[in-house]
Length: 343
Image (tube, rainbow, N blue to C red; front, side, top):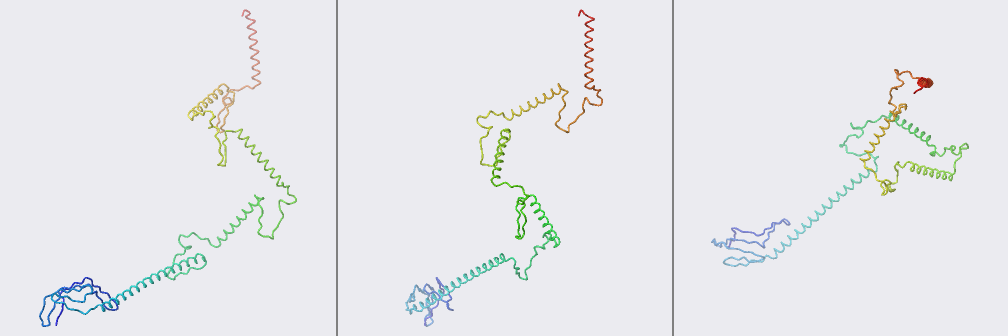
């Protein structure tokens, strides 16, 4: 009797797959080394190399070759069963994963739709009360510490009455100041006499006469504007239309030369000094001319009407005195001529 045992073996690829409760090993690429072969008599033979490659059906020893029944049918059945079980399990796992993903996606879509529906209902129906879980609570917006002060019912009613009175007064004042504005009646049962069509109303111009009058007034205003522009060229031109433009009169090519700012300032100073000197000379040469003051806050004492001034003769006395002095001078001249005929 032979006993075949292995001291050591190496497996190139060992797959431990679980299919239908049994383990399967890939025996196609098994390489065994150091196989001990013992004789039936108890003798021991040296270790030999055993090679099983591909789908061989013989065990090769170093000293003999023994035929082994073929195991192709059994191995093929096992492989087919294992592959079918693994494929079925993979397909089931893929189907389960796809179903789980679709189910989770559907749940998320339904949750989003439910949230959007609640938001739309809350927006379209603000009168509905808010449904809250008893465990949730929050602060009242109107009773918070930082909320503005709220008026009592009495104060609110009084304020409303005051505002109504003010609105009525405003309406009455507008109706009094603007009688041309038509009266708006909200009650069809109210009626009254027309102020402008009453028998004692003044005559009203026709539409043609009003247009003719407006044209005449417009032409008069244009002529007035033209005369003002002609008499006062120093007044700047005012226009409200930004599309209007024209040539500048003072910057045209044929305009006379304009002094620079420095020369103009120096010239103005010289003229101002000349005017001041002229005024001083006139005041010195003509003391009889009264002093003209343009500032009402300036005042001073009159030299000729001061308290310590000598008495001033009247106009009649001065003329009489002048006549007497003239006659005295004439008599003096006559007496000198009589006393000194040689002169």
